[in-house]
Image (cartoon, rainbow, N blue to C red; front, side, top):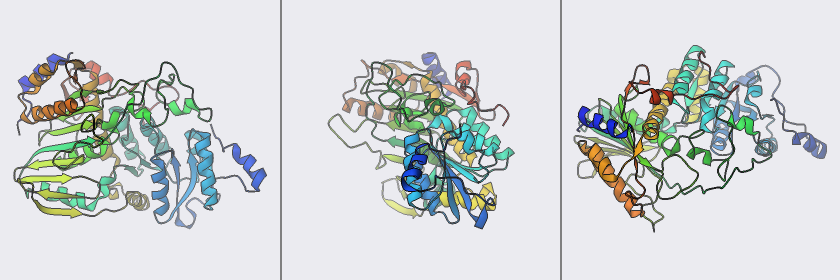
Length: 494
């Protein structure tokens, strides 16, 4: 595998310098039904040996948190928190119908004052992940936090520091880490059974249609506390049709599909390489192509993390395989997953439960299957008090999330260039050039003319993996963290 040599890397760089709230409707419900409003469980903390947990944010992925933690033995849901009072009220009603008595909060700060909570899981938008988790750790809670664990590199490292300082159990929501099949396959490959790893490739080919375009600020639903929703992000007018979910595709709150779905595959690709630090060099290419909308994150992207072990090349595609198709592209049978190329064959991971090994001709020679429950693993570690029992300790989550962030930083500091200039910038790197060629073919099939709507060639960045800062790039280092909106500030000293 040829690395991006220093001359071509410099050439690329030059080209691109270029408040507490029991849901109020519950009182009315009590009058109508005679049912007592939900309150936190009283009595001795941890009574009957139960791990008492709360879930923050449950309009989407949080439903899986509720289901997964309910299934774990010896757990008890005691509180819910959501800034949307309507969503909160409906979920509390569902809990009551199940016989669960839970407290309801709209403000996470008040939830964290509840001494009857042992652990908190977070399925909020990305911009709340690190701050919410750090506050929970400081309040003496163990934490399960969704991926990516951070919105930027610096706050992710602060979260790791908090977990270590307060000796809390913090699990990352990268559930592939609880696949025994994937773990065994990676160990088998890293043992050299099919030769040296030449390249780890990650893929996030997942349909992401346009989110539309508005001509002015949109109304905030009256049931939502928008100040709390924004939290550490700027409190700006809503300039997209949907507040929920589409926050993924704007920079103040999201990280694009690289940090949404792609974080899972980025994590597996880094796992394969065995790297426990950020990459020393990173370069991105891509754009938001094929439509014009209110999204700002790329729907088409290539990221090179130039590790010394072997390069990690990541691809994001949000458009279908062609303008008249509803199918997504696949690379050697993989659409969302990873391919690790080795001297004697490849490892293919296409899901969350297992992997298969193929020879150079694509014939399967070995397979690995098996999975355990990621939420149960978290609860087991909460009981043992050993972070080493976690399948996805917060450090792993931070590193993989940060790889998404540094890739995005390269992209955001880049400039658009004609396709021939981008090709020329990467031509010395065979694998990167081949990946770019496939990206161009994909865009052509979607009738995207790169001469009329050119892609962005990101800024080639060098990083000191020990300090997690870029070398000689002030603008890039400024993007490693954000300006926090008081009082929603990630602390300098956790």
